[in-house]
Image (cartoon, rainbow, N blue to C red; front, side, top):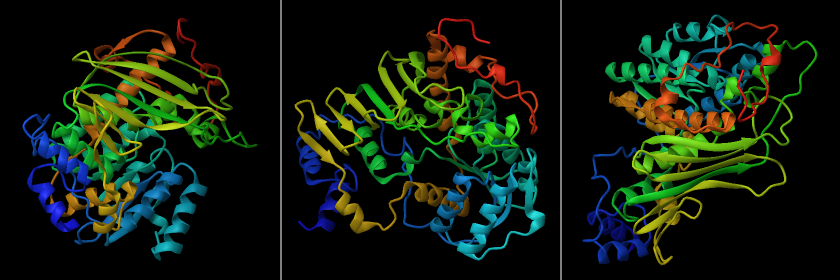
Length: 446
């Protein structure tokens, strides 16, 4: 059978589209034994063409002109035709000018001076400038308020993850997400594994029952320390913190929320389970700036009693590991090898990268998430991803707070908590830096 015939046959038996021959054999021999976790149509499967469909020109507003904002512009341009960068906003003129210059140099698009806004309220001016869609890429602390305003104004939103760093932000996003759905808006977030071909295909296999009922898992994000900014002469406390945002809990949520949320989300997405409790620990060993930890180990207990072990670390010179592992009653899936194995260790499915390369040209999930977003907007079909993303964010927040305090924390406690990391005043100037200290578990928190 040639490859085209094989792919057709595999789809007929309901196994999936891009799979290896061993999966076809396994599915045929175990067809009666495979009990789907969810039936087709009961879970979202994104359409991932190489490029979004054409349609009317979309005027884009960019809120946050740093590295992620610049990256989103490039990925949007690659994802779709008819994209016009209409307005941009940031708190720092140098960042705004960098994105403005890049847009002119790479795409020959001039952003007029009257559509360039500076300040903590620049997001309102961008959203009110006549844009159709908005890209929200400031430090995560500001995401809930920006999304809330964009939704009130009826704008489709792309939000880089994480989209909340504390329970108050979680509740704001949850309320805005319901409003977005009621308004038929399309909202996509930066949990790009949900738009990555190999993850989407693996999820199809898991939902088809190939690993059986999910009984546990392990998720990892262990890497070297991320970037940091030493304070420069003339920078106020607020300016330094925002320029060094990835190292401050109030701005980033700590790296368990800022980065490791990807891996936590994968388990919640594929299992469909809900977190009930988090018990964890962590510490600060070698971090240079900020008030964050540089390692966490969290035991997440689901409502049905299944446990997920979460591990993340940012320390130079240590072994690195990023990925997800899910165990089931009939087998397991490992994202790092793109394989499903039975209980004897035999590979029964493997993502067929060769077939994917033959069928598609675009494989970058950072581009494909924008393809999915623009397709929904141009087709007029609502898609709301904020709820799933913010649920994963709150789970990560639970893990962080458990490590910070040394206490087990339940979902109900955290979702109702009045914990709010946002400063009372948002303005460039002095901050009470003495209040930004590294948390010590088992001691009263300030």
